[in-house]
Image 1: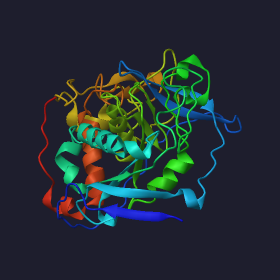
Image 2 (image 1 turned 30 degrees about the horizontal axis):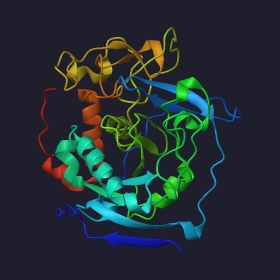
Image 3 (image 1 turned 90 degrees about the vertical axis):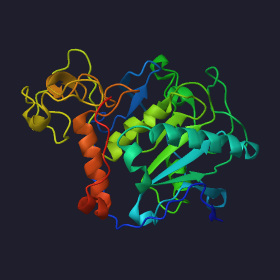
Image 4 (image 1 turned 60 degrees about the horizontal axis):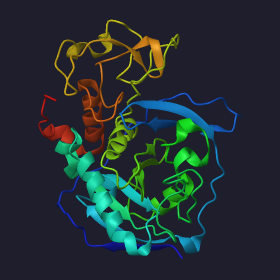
Length: 335
């Protein structure tokens, strides 16, 4: 039986607005069709981001009698259809470790909401915790390759493979994670936390992060740049040249003058740089340009640059009509 239980919010702000659709996510190329591969982002402890192709595993759905979980409102600021609803699900947390999962969710939300523009706009988010419980504690291949655990969402390092490049790629059964997230009143973005302190995570339809690792929350910040702001990745690969048309994403351009963000050229940016046109972006070392040297869309632990921040704020305004009339809160301008 599918059970949807709600407990009283831990934080509550009474504020009602009307919803508008969010823009689509950034367009990204994937592995060739028919290869049986899935392209995923890999996040390293030093903050660098790369992508790799991993075998596309068959993801069995959860049976109806498995879909039972308490739903806790970490922060509820309005009706679900009037807010951005962020849903945390967990894997490798036993029934006795629900309190641990809660502390991990609260910590990750605190980390995310400390970054602008989330810091200034967090009152327009609902944050839900879905208490998915597992028979065993932990995730697969932790601490070493070959360790297997019986968990609800099948999370594991190495993306359940053996390629050394994927050791810190923490994969999840996205079908099950999405099913459990749907128990929350609303679900615009799903983040799956694994019960592990080892640094790791992955991007994709469901972002993942190590629940007990203090740095892994930056993965969620980066992923929301894609899903909320429609931002492109700003990292690149050596010796790869772009030869296509002008990208649709606002934070990359094929124009070496940076005219796409002309109103910001020469300005100091929250990520610590100055807005210009820096070659190397969207997986191409040559032929594409990013606005600043090193933002969160290039390296974890950074801030959004001015162009990225503007895109995020515009997405918030598109969803919340009162922001379109009132202008929204003031954001800090420096790093």
